[in-house]
Length: 180
Image (cartoon, rainbow, N blue to C red; front, side, top):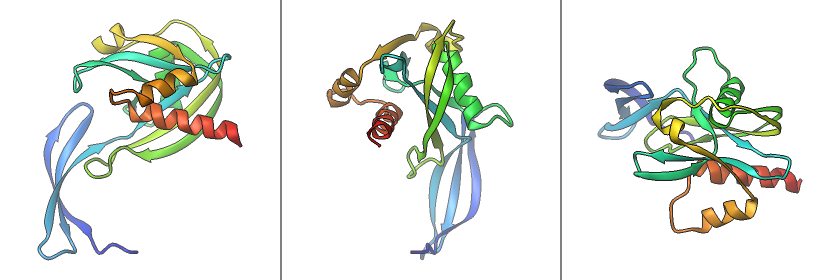
């Protein structure tokens, strides 16, 4: 199927340190229509797996939900010229204090294609060396590292609270890789 839709015009609505918002005029339908889109540079996330096969997570406050969440290390591609793998290594060191000698790309995923062009690249990191963390910002400075078994992650996923999608997707991809 080929789409007859295309972006004919854009109007900037907001510029922030993390993302922009623009209004797009779409033609190919009668009448043309508008969509507001969050424009994002992209991001990375890391499933760090230790020698006991536990997954490293960050317990961190998140203002949109006004609560502490469990997440895998992640961050925005906000350093010019930085590759996704280099950003993943930087985020793992910053948030968890870990360096890894084995890396595997698990995939690239659209975060929410109905309203943002953000693409997340998720990596698996193994053969970890744990050192000091280098948190940035008030939330990261107050965050804590936890190491969860796959059963503990499964209980989080089955719980009543919403769970970070990158955690769920990353752990799923890692467990699928073990099955092959």
